[in-house]
Image (cartoon, rainbow, N blue to C red):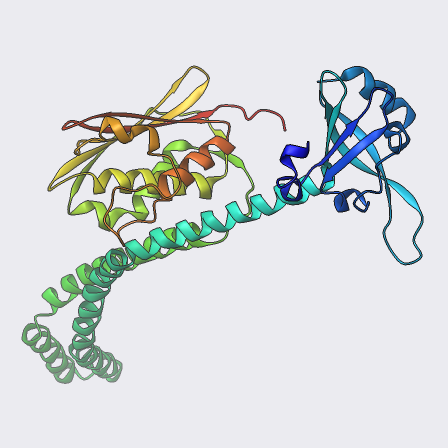
Length: 388
């Protein structure tokens, strides 16, 4: 242990060396995590810091890791009470070295790592939305433009319709007075107004303008809803979902990015069995993979999305006919911060986060690529999630 003295302060574990009788000769590492001061354990019997039954099991287990309870002294001015820290421990084959890991501290670190991952997922999601923002703005502006134009035209039709309705009301009033000549005159006035304003065309045009405007507003609604669902902070909850629908949701978000550059071919198996998944995060996976495929295409190209069931998994293949991934970097493609894009064009996190999400679903994310032919990312999710 003496040769590693400079490393021990960096450890999160407690490392003790004992002699053949179990007396502690040295204790290094994170003693504070176990409630002890430097040098406090030296000269004491290790068994006095473990429960009797756990000491016996630990003493026999040697190399096998096991759960134990390590006695600590509460450090404070007047505190002398003792309690136990749950720990994982492993001893060396000759019993000379034992390593203790504070389970409570490990849980805290795991929680911190998970929170960091969650924040990273959200940041990557926001980054991808930022990259899509210009296209989304155009996608919304296009229907908004013709809806605005249609409403302006509809406004011009108010006057002729109002004039005709006024003439109709005058005709009704005249008919109540039973003045034959006046009724006939009012009828001729209505006919003249209808002809002057081309009311047949106006009615037909109103129908078309209303239909187009409703379609445009529905398109805006779908874009906003898709982005809202994608951008909101997810709960991490899993539910039964249709993989085809999840892929379609990703396509909806990427519609503007794809439509001028890629033909999208859907080769979905139907019906597909429902799969337990975190819908938001799996949507994030397919947004990343499809966008990555689109960016690999120079000029016009095709992205093919194929879903199927195989070997107890439901799969979606995201295939592009882009330039392909060179063999020398395929092994690094899922590494965090690794990117072949120009500075400012990508975060280097999209594929690594996608791999992390698929891994959290106990699934598989595979890469197949051939230079000059294209790349296929294969996402496989188990039909049933293993019990936690």
